[in-house]
Amino acid sequence: MPFTYESSANPYPTPGGITISAVQLLSKSHNKTVQLDGFISDFSIIESIENTGLYFDILIMDTNGLVERFPIIGEEAVYIKFKTPGNEYNTAEGMFHVYKVSPRRMDSDTVTSGEAYMLHCCSRELLTDLNTKALTAYHNLLYSDMVERVFYDYLLQPDKIKKSILVEPTVNSGTFTPCDSSPVSVIMDLATQSVSKAHSKVSNFVFYEDLRKIYRFRTIESMMAEEPVENFYYRRQNLETKEEDKINPFQTIYQYSVDKTFNVIDDYSNGMLYNKTITIDLLTKQAAFKVFNYSDDKDISTLGKYKMVSDNSPYKTNNYSPNLSVGFGEIWSSGQYNAQPYFSNVDDNRVNNPDIAWQTWHKRKASFAMLDTLRIKVSIPGNTNIHAGDIVNIYIPQIEELFDRSNRRNNRLFGTKPSFLVISAKHSFETNSEVEYTTELTCVKNGYAVNPTSEMVNV
Image (tube, helix red, strand yellow):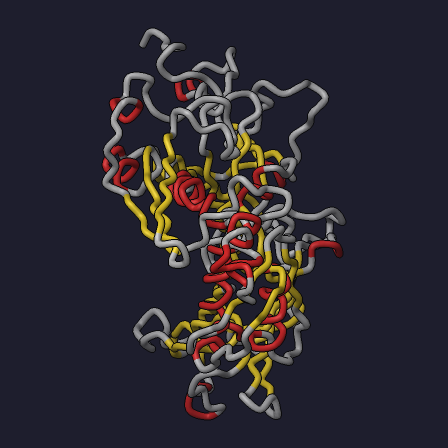
């Protein structure tokens, strides 16, 4: 019998409600299955552009000695399928594999409901990556094609849930030979060498999985170019939106926290404000320098018009950076190599198809550092339609407006179109909570809506 938290008097989707239609524990061989409906207490699923796979934790209240009798010894599969009541189009399902059991406890609070413990699970591909080596050499292929081949040849395994990968096309090709590396390590290495066809100036590729049963190899730039998929509002008021834009209950923000604003020391040391890369060409014994300066850059996409540091910051005139990277690549073009007598008869991919990724490394480094600037967490009614990598608008009133309802301005620095990139989405179900199903979004904004120094206000 599945869990159902849908009100029979309300045929419409209920914010915070959930219908869990299946929770199953399967043995490693899948020849033995136990329905966990009577055991489950809480669960959480996390998807993030910073994680390769999904993580799933499920709290078990065990009155039957499941650990010993099943038994649970590691790598068992847990299948779950759930949705928001009344909405058939946002059903989520996943197959996860147990990698750890938390300490088991029983006390006066749990003696009637059994032994309490957490099953820690993850995507199967994360376990596959630990015991698999990618051995195939790839010659004269687009880097996007290499990623797809590594995924299907080494990482993806047959399972109850059919998964796939979406790969953002690359413009460059090359030869790549794995060196006793795992599939994910190979894909991450390819990410540093890939140049996006659509975003060639800042090729900041990431590799991750979301709840749509899809792995994605795409750039942060491609995410920033998307339109917002939803608006969310703290307190049920329209702020600076049009009157006809009604706020439905699913757009409500229960609570928020600004977890990160700035860290000047980190901004200097991690290369966000200023960094240098040195590329050494082993063919010509030459070196090339690339310099990134935050104040001058116009290539990295930002969710805000203005920079996130003071106009008077010394980094704008300082040529010293504590962040220096050294890499290897071909700094000439193919025509230059082929024109040299000592290269003209050489059949080598580096000569015929020189590396161009090194030209984007300095911007790539800075763009990833920008994702660690202004971070905010918002808790909303459970919503499986919002995923890591989406853009959302988050409307939070300026703090003084919380106490003056006559003026409903948005947060000054966020602006009237406060777009954020969703870094991660955590779906949580708690039986003893006032709201059973919530989604916690961790979002980042890498630009201000107003110039923080020239548009100061009296306090």
